Amino acid sequence: MHGTFPNEFRNLAAFASREVTVKRVEEMKARCDALSPYLAQLPVLCDALARLPFGQGSPFVDRDAVDLARTIAGRIFSYSLYQYVIAQDAWMHGKKDVPAVTEAGTCCTDLLTVLRDILALHEDFSINASMRKLAAVHPINPCFEQTLKGNAENSYCRTYIYELFDPYYLPQLALYRGWVEERVAGGDTQRPMKPAQPLPMEPITDAFYAMPLAEMAPPVADDRAAAFQKAVAALGDGIRSCIRSK
Image (cartoon, rainbow, N blue to C red; front, side, top):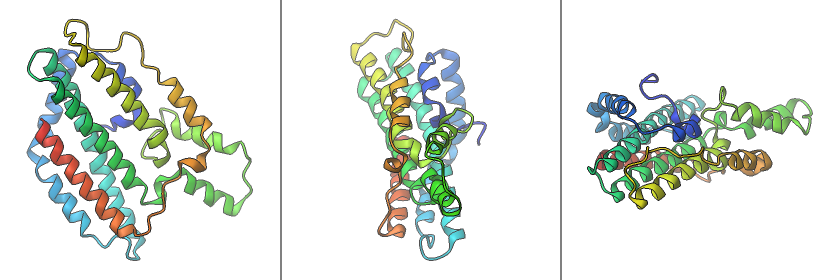
């Protein structure tokens, strides 16, 4: 599954710069078709996750529950992103209208937001938590925060890290969606479906490094069990939306 649905949220800038071509769309359709027989069962799996005794004292249950949920969310986000590209291609060929493209993009945003909310529920996915653990055993150089950000943000290590979502992944997706929305609203189906110039992702990166790490910290849930149930319910709803918008 990892080979078929890699974690595309890690490389949204590169993803957004690629042209919607026949070959690319066919590859994405093949990947999505491989998952299609199992899509209807994924919300059922989310319902099962919601019944786990999360937040009731077992660190093993808590870690495994979040791990399972974030794996599903990460893979289905990639699926939704492929569906977004497929919808753009269909629009170019007169097979989908503008609202259908918008709906496909909304599915992407909703699922990436759910993934963020899932990661917020375990400290293993927070670099703020890593900083606290380091500070508890040894004084930290004030410059180390930027080093830690750099380690998290570089393309080799970029992954399921809560602090990358609000200031980095989600703004990149919003920028990409904004370009797509403007393009389809303009009705131009003749030019290649890709930005003529790279989208301005640099200000997003600069803002990420300028923001204090503490401001990116995940919220502390008053009721972790309820927060987990809410997150996996939202994940199930997001998957259902993806199925409907195909």
